Image (cartoon, rainbow, N blue to C red):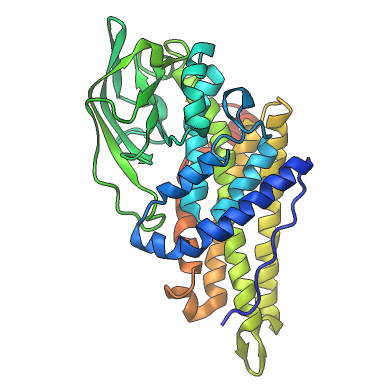
Length: 390
């Protein structure tokens, strides 16, 4: 029924190189990702071959230094690539964001020797990463994590359980936050753990209402030995490293949210201009036209917000508050836009014949991951009026 192809988003990119990069991404999406997205999501298939292609094409290390195989692209560009990937398939866009998050600790806090040893394979050698902070009893209260790492000679022995790990069980490496000292944030240290480490086991993937192609699983660390050479940063620095990574990761989630919302709007516009009722397209009716206008406005506002935060980051300026704002606004907007897209399609929107119901299910998780939107409001409020009094 839809007879109007969506028009590509007109983007403001800083260089000719970045424009060529986006053209490459769009071509790859049309050839390798979009045609199979719906069927593979429905089947719960994780497209590892797509991630291998992204790695081979230099798209898994875009925001990192070229010295170690990265793309040397500013976040302003990297996030717009994420948005395009997420619009085609959130499993891919979010997967790239999670991989980038997993590389952040080593790229930002590792020694030169560690970076030379591991980053080339992580950024462009076909490896896939995951980030291990949350636990069954510590989600939003991440500083209360219980997974322990105990020093034993030149090794650390890691014991505990991590939860809600994207790529859990299939990742080649995990950035793991574990307790090495006192209670609270100052007793946490970061480690780079190989995916095939002895004693590391994944539970069966969670059965989720959306993103069925992206495995999310608990990880059990049963006396996993990690050489001290794989400790990232100083002992007790892990929580600061984690927060730094999450500031950047929240921008990735914001960009993915706008991608999903854009895909939903494109589908709604296509349907509305092709669907006839009372002898004319339903896009002629004012109530529906206003709904589409509101959807488009929320998307543009969200895109502007995440790009403004990215440009602060690229300029080396503080951006934690702006990252929280972008994550909050963009993911809430995605939930509203995808819900409205279902409404535009009416009964068809509630069926599996059209992708908007999948977009709505996918948008929901983006309000939860990498800090719930209630946590984002706490972060923003603290920057406005200071910490809560107790």
